[in-house]
Each structure stands twice: as structure tokens, then as C-alpha cells.
Image 1 (cartoon, rainbow, N blue to C red):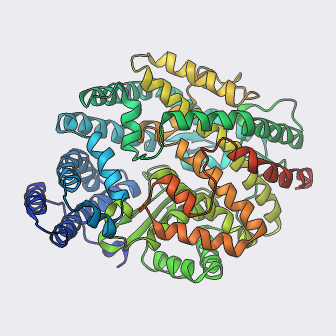
Image 2: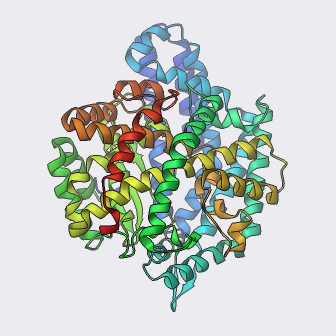
Image 3: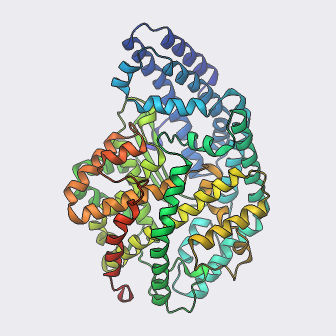
Length: 564
């Protein structure tokens, strides 16, 4: 079914609640595993319907945040979603109390029960009102960012639209574009600080109501992390400091030399070549058509997937006024249809977003028939392996998009993949500080952010921008506001994706088999278990990064980047 033909109808929470409770009671009364499986299937049908309507409302609100109808529907789900979570907690309690757990695990997998345990622990009726208020604040933050009208060169641009000027070869243009962009954030600095402060206090109060010391472990539980915790991510960040930061700094020095600058200023960081960054040689529709060919030739599975996406209008890619910033992939369960949302702006990011979000969507497409909603996507750090690795599996087709700049793109792509890893660590370490010190005032948070930047980006300077120098950069990072502790996931996944890159160099066929198997498993296993199933090394292994970084550094060193 095409996206435009999908019917939205606001679900009646009273009806859903009564039906869910009736099925949960029947689940608890059931005298055999088969009877329980029947009730679980019925409950999941109700959950899928609710999720489908919620996703349709959210997607259509994202497409046009000014649409009053879907704005109201999004607000409705902000209000009732915690109520639905309360009912789902009752379902999980009944599931965990089953005397037939061993038999159920044979049909549904053990991961469902592991997830139920952390989800039960991190939710309670006492926090519903605070969750509703947090949802309202998140919506306010997204609307504030989407409202940006940035005056630049006689036009009013959205944050996405100004993106193409941030890496302009003309230094005056990119400096002016960056100054205009951050002028918007500086103008609303107090609003961003206020919104985040309220979110932190609400989340901390919720955690303490549920018996946590602070929001850190609750945040991990709400991210469904069943086989690692803060100690493991701290060790992973330490690996980044030891092995990634030095390589990243050497790449920045090469960038400075290529650009012929005495010093890289903050507005120079996005420009990697004096002739300009690689850009796709056509418009969004041309990119999609080349995407058709790429996925047709990559594998029979990706061919079927991409045809399904295009034929059913499941890609919204162009930036428009009123459209939410960023990109994401989700799934509409009732249609068994992934959906890709993005904001193309004429940069190389358009292609990497297409391959990145298509990696998410391909996994969802491959695992759409798994037995429960929990498995449509894995936990987020595992999900990002699919997206980041798809970026590398499609390298052989980058000539379709970049033509004579293909080698430039590959160097740019691999080097920026390395350069981003320290940033993932900064966002993660920052959030640990914030939620371990929830009463710290906004200025202390920003000072701590700036100190982390000095640790992970030793050469970065903001001496020409007072707002960034006092630590305001993170205001633009929507994950910090919307999805607490969702960011080290990208670092963990990038290290796994880079392992796929090294495997592709030596045995592309086996690498694809491992990747396809990983996608087909969906969320049916935990992060570490999925990494093992894909024949990858866990990023938590002490020497994981050290064991692979040499191959990457050697490839980058082999490229005469001054000739690109």
C-alpha cells in the first residue's frame, strides 16, 4: 500500500486499554503454552495497530510541522503513549510470570524476556505524568529547531537548507553561513538551556521514583541495554581516547595542509578539500534512480527492498519549509513497511543518508515478519551497524553519484567515519556528567561540554564564536534532548561497521553473507550476541579498536589526498 493511501484513525485509548487488559488476563489464566502464544499474538496485533497509527501521525507531523491536524495528533500520542506503556508493562509482568517461559522462549526467543525485565524495571505508573510532560518538552524543542528561518544571502533558510553553505570552498561564505547558523542557536540559548534543564530534572525525578540513584542506569534500561552498562561504555571511550583521537588529529592536520590554512577554525572543519567536498552530480530524483540501480546490482534482497520502498512512496527526502530537521527510519507495522525520512541539501550527505537510512530500512524489511514488535528493530547500537555498514557495502556504486569525484568521496567518507567517533564519545560522556549531576546549572553543563571538546578534539578552536566557546555546540544535537544516552550507539556501531569495511576488502561475498544474516536476525538477540552472530569482534573487547585501526590508517595513508 502506498504511503499516501494509508488511512490514519486516532485509536481510542479506552477501547485499546480494555481489549489489552482482557487479553492480558486471559494470558495469565492460560493453562498451556499454546494458549499463551495465542493471547500474545492477539496482544501484539493491538500493539501493532497502536504503533502504526502513532507512526503515521509522527511521520506526517515530521513532514510538515505546521499541519495543525497532525500536530494535534502528535500531541495526543505524547499524552497517551505513557498510558500505553503502562498497559504494556502489565503485559510484560504477565509474560515474566509465565510458568511456560521455557516453551515460550523456544517460539519467541529469550531476548523478549530480557527486554521485558529491563522495561518493567524502568517504568511505573508513578512516572506517567512526568513522561507526558517530558514528551511535551521534546515536541517543543523539535518545533523550535524546525522554526529556524536563517537570513542568508537574501534568503530565509532552514537549518537543513543552510547546510550546503557550511562547507563552501569560499572561506568567507562558509564563515558567514556558520555565523548565521549559530546566531539562531545563540538567540535561543536560554530557551534551549531551559528546555534541557526541565527535561533533566523530570528524568531524574522519574528515576528516583523508581528506585534508581539517578537517571543514568534508568537511561540504559530505557535504551534496552541488556548485556552492558556504564562501565563498559567508559572502557570503550578510553579506547577511543587512546587509538582514535590521535588518528583523528592527524587527519585534521592533513586537512589543514590541504586547505593551505595556518589554523583550522570551527567554520573550516566541514570543508575537506580546497576544490570543495564531493557532491552528487544530480538532483534528489536522480539520486533515487541511481539508488534503484545500485540496490538492484548489490543483491536480489536489496533489489526487492528498494523497489518496495520507491513503489510505495516510503521515502521523503527533500528539504522543505516546515519540515522537521534530521533524518530517520521507522516502520509502520500494519503495512510491514519501513519509512525513510531525510532532508537532502545537495551535499555528499544526501547519498550517505540514503545508504545509511536504507540500511535501517533494509534490516526492518528483512525482519518484518519476526513474531513480536520488539524484534522489528534491534537495540539502537545494533541497529546502527546495519546503517553504517550499508554505507560501505555500496562503495562500488559511488561512481554513479560522484562520477569523477568517486575517489575523493571514498577518502572523505572513510576519514569522516573516523573523525566522528570522538564526537560520539563526547556526547556520551557529557550525558553521564549531566545525569550524575542533575542540579548543575546550565553554565556548568556548557563549561563541561567545552572541556570534553578539548580532550577529544585537542586542536579545535572557537575563538571567533563566543557562543560556541562557552560550550553551546550541543544545543543542536537533538539526541541529547530527545533520546537520552542514544549516541555512543553510533560509536559502537561505527567500530563494527569499520570491521565490515576491512572484511569487504578481503572477502566481499562472506562479508555480505554475515551482514544479511545480521539483518535477518532483527532484534531477536542482544547487542553483543548480534555482534558475535555477524562474526565481528565486540567493541568492548579491550583491544578491539587497536586491532583494526592499523588497516584503516594504512588505507588513508595510501591516498594522495592533496591530489583530490
